[in-house]
Length: 398
Length: 133
Ligand code: SF4
Ligand code: SF4
Image (cartoon, rainbow over all chains, first blue to last red; front, side, top):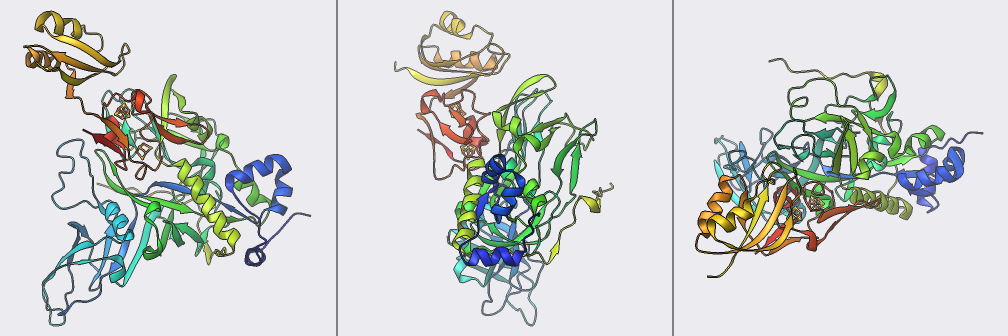
């Protein structure tokens, strides 16, 4: 008889310290040894992980009120503007915002050494941050300016809220032009001389639940070293199954998550400011998702290997910026991880931007939390749209 | 006159030019090659010690030929606290001083192979590669 487990049954086992938890890679090895059916019986939860730059990240902060009160129309944290078009003393600091007077790309390629991502890291490290705010006065909020310092422990809330994280899959970026280009996929050398990819492949969360059968609103996760939750689908959530020119299916792509969690309990090892030469500042975020093994179908998806997961190869000198359709073919994560691929008949060295050792560490930590009985899995309040919903991207006219 | 230490960086099309010969013949410089990594039609690097009266003119000549000239700094170190082992530097580093071990995909830094080109210093998103003067 085929195995069926419920969230409640798995949580009961976790509480009793009896759940069998393993990382997605350990599951792959187990399935090779014992097959899908036995693995489904034996394993309760599989853990995944990713540690990558994720630009669509940021934090809502509530500073508390001063005497007299100020509404805070505009807010700067260490000279980086935070969005304050909210209620008094609320603001959102985005990972990619850079300080006023940053030279940007005026001295191309710009270095972007400090930005919102670095600031978030410093907040988590409990460093003192300079707050400057200005406002027009009102009868209830008369003050027009304030300049002060705070640490994360001295403000009311610090909520990490990342509208688009954990991309299911990503492009393998190359450069066909004769000059070096500086992109969010790193430095791409001229004439197809390197290729950058950004996924942990067979450990990456959304590649292991391609149809969103277990991941949904409310799913409890590892986020930035602490506990977080899936809040919604991410922006630009267009789940699909990739096909090559012959119609062969090449695994999932397109899904994203929006994530939330209390920044105060996170750890800067897993939230790190980062800079992309000539592109901008961002935040590297550590994310780990648990996948409950409810039945054999979920095991099959969670045990997919690098050799069966593919990334499209995209030219970032022309096709990407000018939004020209098509790609230069697909390449598997197994090939990407060897350090060399073949594109247009040329041998091209590859390098990742997503840390595989850190992804592995995250999957291991989450496995430990669940094994210890301190981290229970959650049945989603609602599952997220999947490939069957056929969501397509809208484009902007103009 | 004390020797000056410099780093020359070649683009693929400047590696073919006989610049060292010209430095000796036209500028009368005494040259000691400390490190070299030159391959035809690829990016290349030379670390030199130069002595001679026409030192500045020699450098000017190199720049005109499209060779980048920088003073030699002591070295490059990797700040292990900052490095996240993403691997992004491993195809930027021209000498494989930064390299990945497979299948663990851990990134290592081999000081001996480093020619101090500093390409990794700006390319590393974590600013983990530091210049030591
Ligand atoms: S790019 Fe920087 S953080 Fe990434 S592996 Fe290289 S040194 Fe480490
Ligand atoms: S400076 Fe950096 S990029 Fe250049 S050789 Fe040394 S390690 Fe490699």
